Length: 123
Image 1: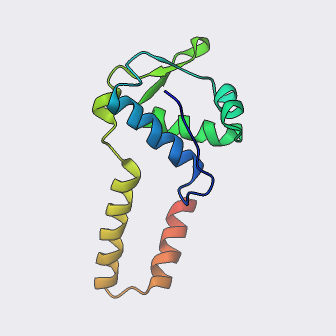
Image 2: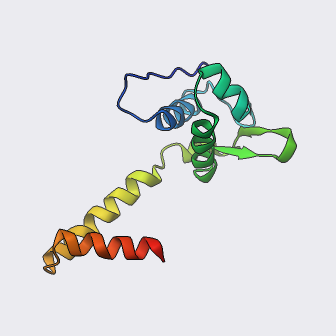
């Protein structure tokens, strides 16, 4: 499977990588236990920063789409297909939207909500 980055796209590069890997799994182009290129190799092939690939790999690992196997490398997770439909970011945004709506119903201003959010994130 070939990954292509569109620098003119508004979608962040790491998100483009995530979406393409998940689409590769859904389409069967990336099968379970298939080896993924190293972070360095993929970054070099695409001409992008290694940190961008590392961020995408970290999120794909969190979502159980890929799995690191020590020095042997990174592979497509055995159950990746069932995890490709999960979008934790989208779930988080939905939950935050509901929470902000509830706080506004209670009468908190946007400024108060931001201050509370920042205080929680610092703790």
